[in-house]
Every structure is written in C-alpha cells, then in structure tokens.
Length: 397
Image 1 (cartoon, rainbow, N blue to C red):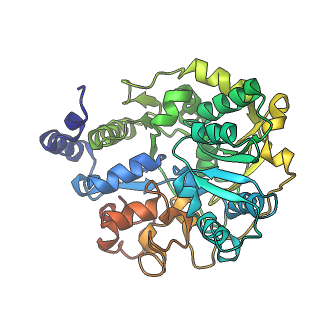
Image 2: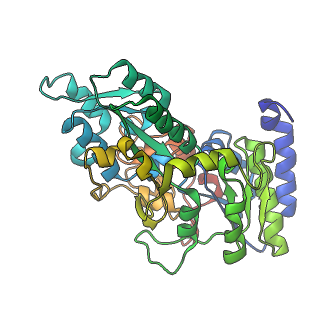
C-alpha cells in the first residue's frame, strides 16, 4: 500500500470488520484506549466504531496536546502579553482554549485593538519558523513562541532555539509547554494513586503514530511487561486503526502482552535517533508538570536547558505557573482519563460547542468532544445503565 486511498478502502474495511467479528470471544468485553488525538479524529470521522462488534469498546485518552494543557499555562501566555508586553506567536488552536476570568488568547487579541494602552501583541502562526522570522524582522519587539505538543513537535522547537542562539537573537524566546507521552500512559495505568476523576479498566492501547516516529516503540515495552497491557502502534488511517484493533484482540485472546508495530512504514523500535539527540541537547525533563485530567505528573514534560536559558521565556520574564480549577460544569478531566464520554458531560453540545468552547476538549479537531460533535457521534444511543466501562461502542468514536 502506497497511497492514502488504499487505507480508506471500504471493501478492505468490511473484510477487517469481518475478521474482527470472527476473532472476538462472545463471553468477554474488550476495552482499548487510543492514545492519540489523530486516532480519535479518524475513528469519529470514518465511523470505525460502527463496524465493530458490540463488545469491543474504544476509549479516548489524553492524546490531544491542546486538550491536556491546563488553564494556568494559558494564563501564563496571557500575562506575557498583557503585563510583559511581548508579541506572542501561537498556533490557532491554543488561541481558543478558555482561560481564567472568561478570557482566552483570542479574546485578549480582540481587546488589543480596543485598548491602545496595552503594549503587547498576539499573532497566529502556522509554523514555529514564522515566529523566528518575525523576531528577525522586528528587532524592536520581544517575541515569544508558545511551544506546545508531544514528542512530535519538540524537535522543531529545538531547532528554532538553536537557530536563535546562532543568530544572536536577543528578542526571541520560547514558552515551553512540551509534554511526554510515556509518563501520561503510566498515569492512566497506575491504580495506586487516587485520581479525582477515577480510573478505567483497559485491555490494551492503540499507540500513537507521529509520536512513535520520534521515540520509537521501545519506550512502551515496559507497559506491556509491568502492567501486562498490549500495545499496537498504529497509523492514522481507518484501516490502520482497524488492523491495530484486530492485533490487540488476538493478543488478549492469547493472554499475551507485548508491543506490536502496525505503522512499520514510518515507525521503528528505536525511533529517530537524530531527533532524540537534538531534543536532549536543548531540553531536559521537568521534575513535575500539571496536565489537565491527570494532575501533576513527575518528569512528564520538558524545560529548556541552562545552556539555552536566554531563550526561555519563563526565566526571562519570571512568569510562574499557577494552578486554576476547570469550569465546574466541564468534564474534560474525566474525558481525558477515559472515564467519561464527551456526551456524558451535561453541557456538551448545548452550552459547550466548537464555536463556544467551555473546555479544551471542544477546541482542537483532535479533541474527543470536538470529534464527537463534528462527526455526529453525540447522537448515538446512551450507554446501558450500570455499565462498568465508559459507554457503548456506538458512542465511543
């Protein structure tokens, strides 16, 4: 297979669906968590759950980097604009994430045009390179790049910081919000630490695609060994996901737990070593970082090393993270942990919509709530009363 259309072929999908139906045991349920927002989007867009037997359940995990960023981190970016007077450069999705006091970065941007006394500025960019170029073109401005994402987007940020140092750009810095996938998976699996949103029973994971092109499959092996949970790293296309589900079912039936690589056309066991070395040169693990839905997780995010401290916005502007509670009606925390479905939130699709998001899961297209809303998964039937798993398969896409 070389072309995208082949991974979306309806006839092949029906064949995989038949193989899945044949493989499942009728006397048990199967609960698999996809740990990638791209998978969540594909599952909802292509109706993958509609092709699965009723005892195969797909559960959403914290795989959207915009969704897991807590309110306090967005507040930090807002303070940089309003108080430090910087020009903040950000991708589009973080601009719409609700922050404290009914604000968002987008609302702050709108206020900049009305308040001539506010010194800062805010610009939407499509690439971190746009932020670096803007800093070069406007030496009179202090430019801060809001860097978010999992391991996939971290190497490009490292390149930017090295380039800024080589150019001697004194007006460029980075607000680093890069997070790491394995600690989040460990948090989902850990049952000894109480979480306010509860825990969920899982039989295995559909492993992330783009993240795994960087870190490889090796970091997941401990989860299979220590927790006896199989993982299949899968590509983003619907046939990728369906094949991964079939591979997981076969492992569960055989009582096995190891890491398999369905996405072998792009992922290896060791990953991209050059990218890993670049990240290690520029970044180091934070001792702790707050995730929406997961709380404070040790060594789950990155910070800029001291050798590049001149380009660390947190140090340059002495801006500190302050924890802020989510909206009391928002269930994003529970959705990100997989203990609730989006439509089990009482404000889903009414008060909270993509046009008026109350929680971060409704902002990004990779967010579970946005995927459910955009592709009509919210219209599915309610889960059976007393179910001990997060909903029925017809609604978990």
